[in-house]
Image (cartoon, rainbow, N blue to C red; front, top):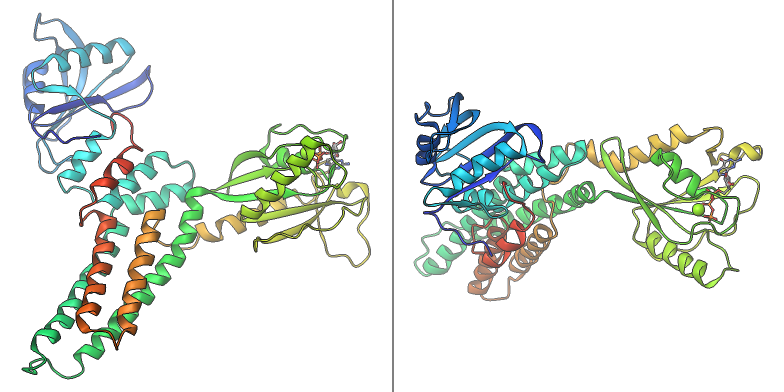
Length: 443
Ligand SMILES: Nc1nc2c(ncn2[C@@H]2O[C@H](COP(=O)(O)OP(=O)(O)OP(=O)(O)O)[C@@H](O)[C@H]2O)c(=O)[nH]1
Ligand SMILES: [Mg+2]
């Protein structure tokens, strides 16, 4: 568990794998200034990049020539005094500089996520910003980057704070009514107006929740399962979309026996494509298990591509329990001409027919979400859970005209606290470890 020792100064390599052109060593805490003065002799001007020769204070030996930044707190990322050393990115240079810095009294190696943890502890970031920052570091597609940046910059935090403030205000009116009804100091109609406002706020929160399911899809990636009878060309299609040989392709029926996954970037949206075992009745034990898995994956997929070879009938479409959309596609289109007045969607991996169009449709499906400016702000299951709970309590409070007013006020308090928990405004010690576990050393 991470424990904040504010008096300790921490240090770590914050840039990536060595060797590299420039390595960034970060230092944060009260000894930051002392570290620079000791190894660079002269303190540079605050927030100005200065070239300095780094020396081992024990024997005056030169370690490297570096760009040094002195960043006095509290207006730094961690909220503490900080120093940044941009050294040559070799293992030997980084090891030598770290060895010298860590030998100084009161300086130790940072734990994973500790820079970010200090930023949070010092009020420089709320919990949603921390999560956004974690997502930004892990972002692989444009859509993920955009969404993560927005959250890291506090978009979600501001929205939640606004909701919470409105709830607190509404509750104050309700409680004022409670305290003063006998004296009749509260103008008529205030309570009704307040309840109407709470109902409207609950609707606004619900809309955001719905839109945010789309955001979740962006983070996770859209799951597309390719299903069809044996030899329909499922593995061939997956390979063509992935532009590499992920799955074995052969004329033998029942080649693919396990569900095989490959991650693609389609139009900036991550797509997880799943190749599955061909569906048929007569199958050996292993293949039967493969078929069971294929159907199970189809149930949880966001979209199913049902492939039917042009020169065969392909059998019936399996009935899926979930309401997953299914696109029927005629595959191996080069082998048989389309039936007259058939408007089916046709592809051929061999001739390339229909592949561009399919990719475009898939990107459209996956990114209908991504390009949409109305994308929701919430990204994590814990956000969804808390907001859904808060909405539930707010609706109970609005509807509960026949329950005591104290109880209705209490429901609003709970809803407000639940929202506060998302940003960390309300105590969430148990959550912190879970969230900061995503980070590695140097962040
Ligand atoms: N002519 C033609 N042949 C194709 C096309 N796509 C796949 N094939 C051939 O069809 C055979 C089966 O292809 P696969 O991709 O292994 O089919 P599958 O659906 O994965 O089959 P299973 O894994 O056995 O269920 C192979 O010999 C492929 O070369 C196509 O578009 N045109
Ligand atoms: Mg296959």
